[in-house]
Length: 319
Image 1 (cartoon, helix red, strand yellow):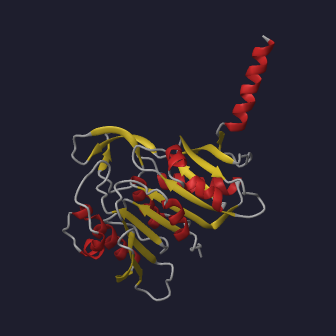
Image 2 (cartoon, one colour):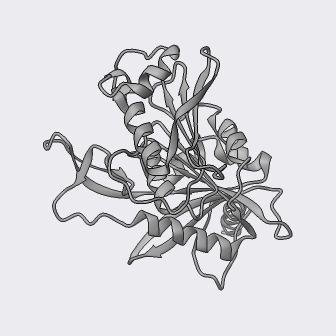
Image 3 (cartoon, one colour):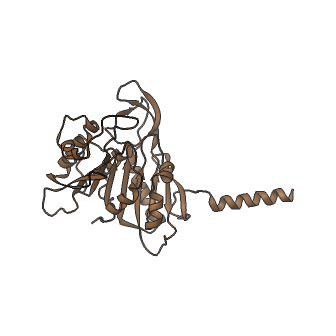
């Protein structure tokens, strides 16, 4: 019996040292662990979760940059904590990285027939609508609540908070570029974005949109877009290459952010080609929009993208 008690004690100690730190946000208890943390926060009566990686080099003596990474459909924060590459970049670059989980809904796809239960961010248009009786959660409020909680728990740099989103998370990132641009220094939208009617952006900020030249959405297929075709993809409203999304996304952003429709083309057709738009109004150096076409990439957040995205994001600071 004594040996059993000792074994239980050792197991408990091991779990204490290695298990995810789980806390409910409370400004009176600003505790955390170096490494992986799972936090929950009450938003409109729902317990919402998010994961935070605190790098070993973090101390309260200096303010740390923060990067949010938003997962896609049928994912969650823990998936992208594990697989996106951002916690590793956070560790080496001394960044606090944050991985929120969206809400799970019964949804109806745009065909009106296909129903499924899956995780979605509250961002449209995204090819779906909630089933009757579903209440869509306010994810803008959720993300704002996380920033408030982070600020109470850590010493963060409020002028260097960044956002990256993949797929449905990319659409949510685009929504944030309008509705939370006063809180994010720069934003990356990966694989998807928003188009159509949008609100007036709170601030004109740097945005990078990236898409693979073989990306037709989850499970989708289509012809490979030649890497030399980026100018065509940005100009042709009727093309079916990449579902015509590059035209729709770029034209929406150009219109609402007041960009010069002329762009600077750069890059390497063997890897990544970019088109960069700048403001049509003098004196707006942060009003920058870059579209990146990535070679041989289907629907996925690219391997190695986290460090490349960080190299782009870190050059910007909130005014």
